[in-house]
Length: 328
Ligand code: ADP
Image 1 (tube, rainbow, N blue to C red):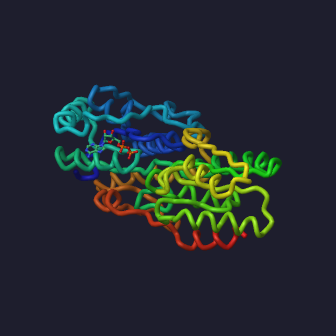
Image 2: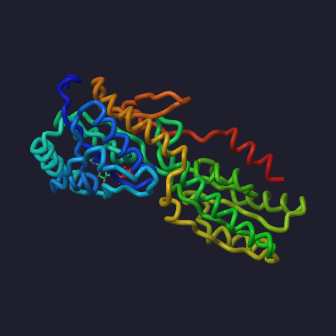
């Protein structure tokens, strides 16, 4: 579609929620207003496209949300959008609402849906990466990641107080089913004795070595940060095996869980979301589609959905190295 043909942009938040999605939504709506485009919000993820749950959004509709976690549009996982019939219904509602292009704030599942939808019906789509896991290729950071990291280190700092007072060892599980970004960075920032992530294929002996090193260095309490998706069996088994090996340790487990998804977005996430929301509108106006807006080395870049979905963000080995140097 030629750039001058876009008059109305639809915006949807889809998949797992992340702090900063509201700031991204606000940026999309305000940028549309700036460029004199209409903006329509689709509620409840792709479900809202299928059920025609669509509302007009003006600049005042997004007042006072830049600081709020979650997403005011709400989000959902929508099985029907995975089917051709579901996407056909979505297309009919897109036409009914005179939406010319769609901005999708979500993760790689949401981008796959958008990509399929564009290929089938020719509606230009553009992605904005919103997920706490930071596992999307094409951007240094995803929206919500920095907030989640800060939530995790605040929680671990509190756990450290009690760990130190009682000379306890804590296994702390953080989110990241397939990616260790949250674990690795929060582990460094909270001074963990060991960090277990799916990318590292740890052996239990390495964990035991780290614990022994701590003991030799005179450490009386230990924080071990474990990504949800590490492959040794999860925090409870790790705690059990460690207790069998070192019966003298007082060992506890904390699973941080969904607190990591919520809360006010940090400054970094608000700025990232604001930049990407504006970039998404401008990208569509420039005729871009089937791409994701991201920021790399402080510049806005657009990555084709094909690449953003298939390629992986890789863990920085330098971080693994310094985590090891510092845990002594
Ligand atoms: P995320 O966007 O956070 O990765 P999901 O993987 O749950 O979250 O995807 C969000 C939604 O995107 C799904 O509920 C579904 O509606 C849509 N979606 C995901 N994969 C596909 C697909 N292959 N085809 C069409 N729609 C998809």
